[in-house]
Image (cartoon, rainbow over all chains, first blue to last red; front, side, top):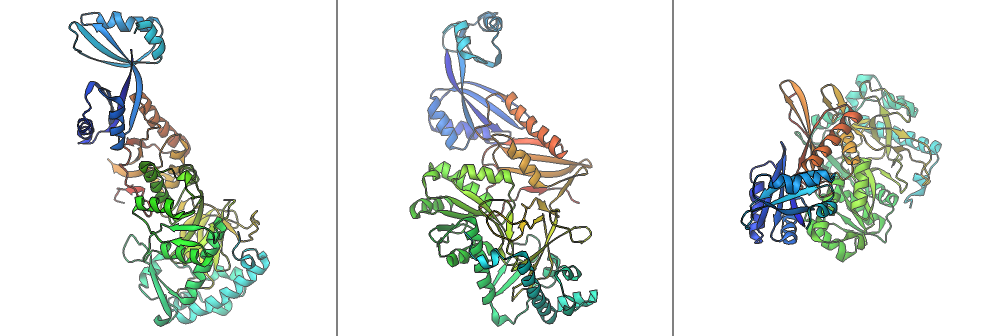
Length: 130
Length: 432
């Protein structure tokens, strides 16, 4: 299903990550899923938050550069081949490109959750099913 | 609106006759009263009576900033101290400042050229002018202040700083004109955005911006972010302060008040005068100053002069936008580049915020150039690849347009210091 992901630009400077996390804690916003893409000078922290609009607004107010993007959150079976057969193969077959993805273990036993950014979220939703 | 039609629309012929008359008087005065000039004239074997035409200007000695330092504080003063009613001083980043004394007559002339300046920008006595230039020794504050009052407008002397308060006053007092540096106008725009104030619904419509260089692209950024027409002005403490030249509403060059300041363009290496239209160093001679008359001051500013009549009706020569100073040109691995060029290229790329710094260094005997640019929400992407693409695009533009190979570093918003006065954008860490 489609969800909103919050991404934040963090410079590779000591204290910046801590500052960002403090903002979220202060507002009582919980991070449900997290991934970081880093380059030499900066990192892009991508998160699924317990409260997207509250978290994004708080971060913006603290002068962070924030972007909200639509990504897909899908449950997959937590066993070998789970990611391959549930997500990767179907999307590739449908010609939908995967920009990035990350995973986390959720509460359902035997299941994992994949967060995936694709070029065409609507088409991907059809392919993968809600 | 033209404040003084007599002098601003005079025929070139009449103007030149007036200039020669005034030049002769100035030359006699400096020869008589200022030992520094007397000596400089004698070294060249000339006396005031040798000045018979404007062409003879080329025979006179130049004055440079160092001459002000060598004659600090009152070596160039042409009147007794009791006639001096005010003293201003320049920011002078190194060593002693330039000291500029004024007689009552000078203050009056200054108010006159500033009234002309504001009128040329499109201001009238019905305007409410918020003066956010620094007040004090800096000529910007009081220069604009007296000009606004001479014009008959309502002047609010907020000076620079206290930006949130400035914006509140802007809304509450009905400010129509803001006068400040270009970099401060960006700070005002940014702060208003943060405050949730929409200046587009205020009465603000005009900005008269100067005291630091500003590329055409930067000016367009300012005009997008603030609901103003941004008029460029030029001046320097050694001449009087602001009030040497200003754009008219057509924004096609700055008209120099030639009845008070005689302008020439020279080749900065040889000192030779250059014809109209050619880029070179601007040299200015005061024609009416009493306390501090200055002959052929080398401004180090690079520009060209255009004597063609302007659509506004003024016959005063126009100087093109200053592209750089003879001393702020950077030489990076043998390539000559002006910070203003870097600015132009940066701001051409869509979405790039006008907050940047240039850091030049030398690592292992090689010059390095790093341009730090702030990220804005517009250019930020959740995909690292897209950010890299932006860095590469900027790098490619710099390479193809300027022949330089910079490292582009994207930094967080607000990490580059904001200014209320002149912005410092170049950090040259090389020990040359």
